[in-house]
Image (cartoon, rainbow, N blue to C red):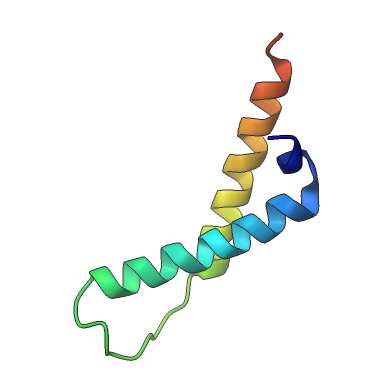
Length: 63
């Protein structure tokens, strides 16, 4: 958990997580061999980053 206090580690984890979420959404919704018309991986990465930041701030407040 101490690693998540660094901003750049949270950014890398969120980019990887956003890419994985986008791929899972593409594969699970229909034919996986169709071309990907929209790529929302950066939006998902932003959501993952904000979630991780919120959780880290919440955990720091607890005694």
